[in-house]
Length: 254
Length: 50
Image (tube, rainbow over the protein chains, first blue to last red):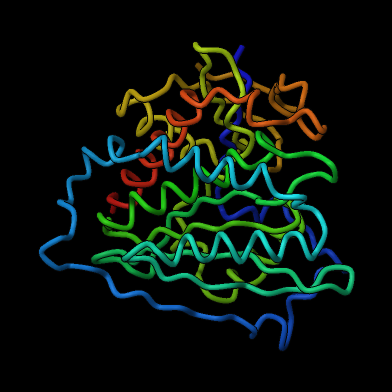
């Protein structure tokens, strides 16, 4: 039985999120979005864009560096700890040519938090989005290597690789504070004001993807109503041949 | 393979999740790199669909 989870939640977690009165995403809090535009490097040194070769550009050494940094932090739980982690991750993303990086600010229990959003603009359908994300915080006193430095590092590395080779649609990558419940609720509230559902292909929530034996396979968990999207995701991964997959269909909310 | 987990979460067997033992040394870095490649493959493919 597979044990890791790459949980995708189509329709941007909307089906799973309920209104949280402790999350303030209205007014000035939502408007407090810092946009940092980075020019796409199309110069002579730009990497060759070959979609079929992208998986080979994933660099385990870079991933190890990210995992080490995340797990060596004194904590990724309190507001102050999460703010420090967010600043580091934002700096890492801003090193990547082709990404538009922003902070989405919200308040939770009276304290300010940020989700990080990194967009890779599409070539012909910029206002259509495929999305993925992971929460960067962890439980108090836990190094959170699997939960969820693993998901965070995977998303950051995917940003590095994918930014050099955009597709037709835009890719939006999100790093959530406060787990994939509070942080994602704030993200979805903002997103719903910006992107109609018809322009969202789906969302992959990457969670606890680093633990298992050598022959581990990847769990793809989806809700019943998003099975078609799940089928597309599974087909893409299976075609790449990088890891075996198992799909779980049920009521899970990432 | 498709399995039904209606009524509950899919299985997870990391005994260290949420504890102070969820450390880097417990991770399977080869598997993690493969999952990262899977993420890249999925997003690259989906972003190229009409």
